[in-house]
Image (cartoon, rainbow, N blue to C red; front, top):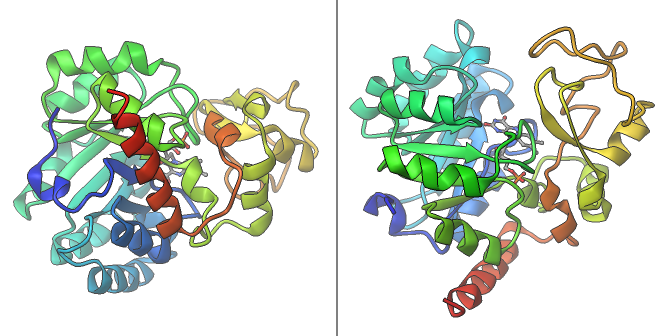
Length: 308
Ligand SMILES: Cc1cc2nc3c(=O)[nH]c(=O)nc-3n(C[C@H](O)[C@H](O)[C@H](O)COP(=O)(O)O)c2cc1C
C-alpha cells in the first residue's frame, strides 16, 4: 500500500470521483472533495483556457486544506500543442495537488508537476503501458480494467493489480465497474490504494450529464453494456439503449478506420450522442447528490471492513 499522507488525511473513503468528459465540472469536483473523496475533471471540459482558469479559481476558493484534494485530467495527445502548456501553467499557479494524465506519454510533464509539489497519476490499460509509465517516474498508476466506463482495458484486475505491485511501489488506483463501498474495499484487498469510480458519479445531481443520460444509467443493466472500438476508434463501453436510440445496431457496428478514427454516420460522435457507461450500471438504481452518495459508500465500505 502506498498513499501519500497529504492525500490520506482528508479522505472519508479511499476513492476518486474519476474525470468524465462533458460530465464533471466544478460543482461535482467541489461536492466530491467536501464529501471526502478526491474530485476530478478533464481540463477540456472547460471550453477554453480562459474558462478553465475561471473553473480553477472557483474550485481553489472552495476546496481547502480541510477537504479531500482535487485532480485535473490532461488528455496528453489531444491537448499537446493546443491547450496543454497554458492550462498546465494555470495548474502551476494553483499548485494543483494531483494531475491525472491519460492518452499519451507522461514523461515530458512529470518533472514540471513535481516542481510545484503535484503528484502525477497516469491512466493505463495494459501491463506494457504500466511499466512504461512507472519508468517515467509517475507517482500513481490508474489501472483501467475490464468493465470500466469510457476507454476500458481488456485485463482483469486480478491479473493486473498484483503484477503491477511487483515493480511499482507508488500509488495504485483501480478502475472498472466499482460502484459500491464493498467494491472499494475489494480494490484495497486486491492491493490497490484507491478506487476510481466514474459511472457511479454520472448518476448524481451535480454531474453535468443530461437527465435522460442519468436515467439511463439507472435503468440499464450490466448485460446491456457493449464493448466496442466502433464508436471512438478504440475499445470502450457504451449503453446498448443509447446505441439503439441513435439508430445503430449494437450487434452490427461499423469497423473503425483506425485508432480514434471511427466510421460512424455523419453527426454521430461518442460521448455526445452515444453514451458511455461501465458494467457497474447494474449496481446503480438512484440519482443522489454527491454528499449522500459518498456517505452511503462510506457506510458500505465500513461494513465491508468489518468482514475482514
Ligand atoms: C462518460 C465517460 C467519460 C469519461 N471521460 C474521461 C476523460 O475525459 N478522461 C479520462 O481520463 N477518463 C475518462 N473516463 C474514464 C473514467 O475516468 C474512469 O476511468 C472510468 O469511468 C472508471 O470505470 P467505471 O465507470 O466503471 O467506474 C470516462 C468515462 C465515462 C463513463
